[in-house]
Length: 241
Image 1 (cartoon, one colour):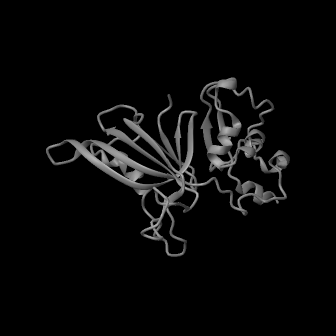
Image 2 (image 1 turned 180 degrees about the vertical axis):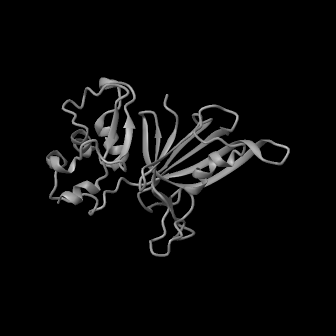
Image 3 (image 1 turned 60 degrees about the vertical axis):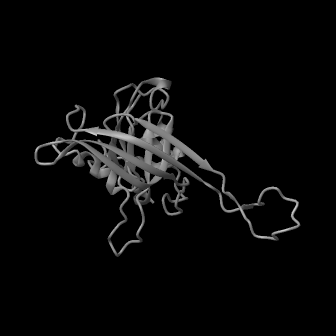
């Protein structure tokens, strides 16, 4: 199975984990609570009445192992914090006073079964295997995630434009160096689907035609394994309008 990864929606930055989770727990609360308000006597109820408190929440807790002595990381360091630091940053608010402070929305991606927009609500780390200078080589990182709703902002895509009618002139020959890239895993119906990629990168599966047009794909159900697709930003739609 593909390793767990986190995709920062605002920047499309991908943070890949070295190993699959040691533990994984998902918990759903229904959005109701009990109230004890009311009379202390003469009540026929055996339990406090339920009241609606909201739409509930979905929480995910997982534990990840990082070790600088293991192969497979793109970051080479003797300090395990170089590997876990990007995940710690996901729990930090923006500091730019010109912008609204908010936690970054990231997608928790694990194989083809899990693709969930979340924020990191908590992080803790236990270090092991120290060098003589006190530098840790291994750590167990515990992450607490909270699912957020799939929200498409009204200004994300101009309503007057349909990705199926993207003008050919905005698809530059060879694309743009700033565009993202995705290598197809698997092939045919068993591999990555364009609608899955559109959901992953844009938060909108219906935007798959934009990826198809940008890569001159006539048959989206038959993209060979290993194909590197260019993932254009949605801003090209705004520039074309």
